[in-house]
Every structure is written in C-alpha cells, then in structure tokens.
Image 1 (cartoon, rainbow, N blue to C red):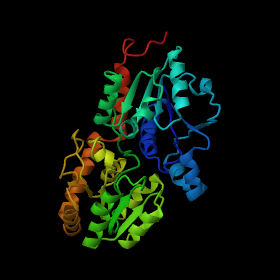
Image 2 (cartoon, helix red, strand yellow):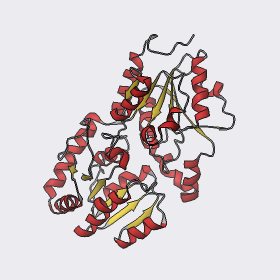
Image 3 (tube, helix red, strand yellow):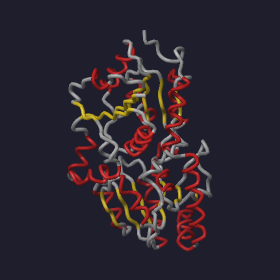
Image 4 (tube, rainbow, N blue to C red):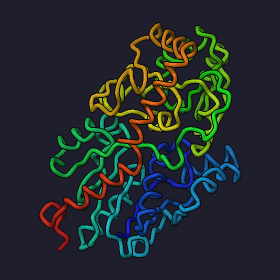
Length: 370
C-alpha cells in the first residue's frame, strides 16, 4: 500500500509527543514493504521551537536514530494535494493539523478519492475544547482513530458509532529498549513538558516532594517551564536539564534508577485509561516506574506488577524508597514491564491493528467514493 500520513511534524518532537509514536509506526510499515510518506508543513511551530532551542544539532538524534524516515515538507499556504495524495491507498490526518487542511483532504475523498481516510486524535481537546473539535469538518472521512476507549466513546456520541477505532500509542521497540550493557544508575528522572498548569499540583505532590523526602536526586527534562515552575524546581533541589530529543530518551533512562508517570489531569479524570507515551517508552527501556493515580480502565498493564501504583504523596514516597532499597523489586518490575511491552504494546502491534482495521472496511463501511 501507499500510505500517506499528515502530521504537524515528524522531524520535531519538541512539545509534540505524537512524533514519538508516529516514527515507530512509519518505520515498521516501511520495514514491511509499504510505500510510506509523512507530510509536514514547512515552518511548523514544533520544528521552529526545536531549532530555536537546540539549533540544527537538535535534529541529529532523529536523523541518526531514524535514517529511514524522510518527511515531505510542503507549503502550508498552498499545499499541492494532487502530488501529496497521488496513488494513496490509505491516508491518515493527525488532529494537530490546520482545520482547513483537514477539510480539504476530506473534500478530496468525498469527490471520488480512492483512498481510505482516517482522522487520528491523540489529544484531550474533544473534552477540553469540544466546540473547537466538533467544528473540524470530517464529513469526507471514513473513520476516526482515537488513542483511548474513553475518547472513542466521545466520538461515538458525536455520531461516529461503527466508524471509530481505539488505537493506543505504543513503544518503538527498535529504538526504545534496555541498554545492551548495564552501567551505573542513580537517582530519579522525569521526562515531560510543563504545559498549561495541567498537573502542577500533581507534580509537586507525586514527584518533587517525594524525591526530596527520600533523598533521591531528581533530573527533569522537558520544555515550556515558566519562571514559577523553575522556582518550584529550585526549592526542591531538582536539576532542570531542559529540552532533550526524544531519540535520546533511552540513554537518559539508562542512567537512572527509576521514573514516575504523572498523567495530565484530563487523563486522570474524564478521559481515564490513556497513559502518556512515556509510560510505554519507560517500560520498554527497562526502568522501574511508579504511577500517580491513574485508572487503567482498559487493562493495558498489570498494576503493581509492571509498575507500582500509588494514591497519594505518602504512597509515592514509600514506593520510591522501596525501589531504591530493594534490588529484587527493581528487577521484577523491569522484567514484567518489558514483557508486557514486547507482547502487547510495541509499534509493530499497532501496525498489525491498523492493517486489520483497514482490512475490515468494505464498500458499505467506507464513505461512498462515487
């Protein structure tokens, strides 16, 4: 198949977590012999910030780690959809594209495009900004790929019953795996962006304060940390390391004793069951993980076997202390978490799921292309 994916950026992962998953999915499709195109707008926001933060050298980890991925960069003011869609069998459009582009591709499909067309939603805007999302013109789309069952339920309520599929994120195990040779590990690490104060209290309660209480050095990697956030890190003695390319995350995890999962508030409340991509990646890299309150409503993982779950700051403090002092516990968590990723949550599994979804579509379930 010729598969075309429209993304905000493949080159840049700066505050663009979908790039993590997308890279793994596309490289697996390429390895299976599919003709794959990733299309991204020239001068996009994420890439602009990456270059401002790390310069052209900031792209080196992506280029080194993913030599098989080479996105097509188009003019967002005048995209040549005839060329970009030429010969396409399957087209997927990510939700972080301009609404005009989303609509234009749907219009091509409705006017007789012979490709299957999916909208890919990996964000909480369907519940945090529903009017904004419902204003996006998806009339020409064959279906929606949603990254959690609770998000799929939202789309079913909007009339997409039978045409929305839950398609979770996963780890690119070609890139995210335990180190070939174990080296020294020390302290705690958290890789994540600050965002719009969506989890400020949670980070203090479940990360900064427990790390300080246990006496574990804490390294933070991420972007969009305002002055008040940096001041909070300083009060707790946290080392803020700034932006790190996602391709460098396995090496970062390999230097640390443990990490923590702190879901954004929407995914801990009204969209339960959707973990951050870091949870998949951390377990794939073989680092013990402790999670702040999060309802694994879909049974993606084995709670307290693949990772430790806590309900409050005191529980996090106890869990981190246990991980620091108990080597057998660390080894058990690593082995179990890695097993779950390898057997259920690699990007290869998601490609299997995607191809199965496409195979089930018939002329009756697809939009009429006539």
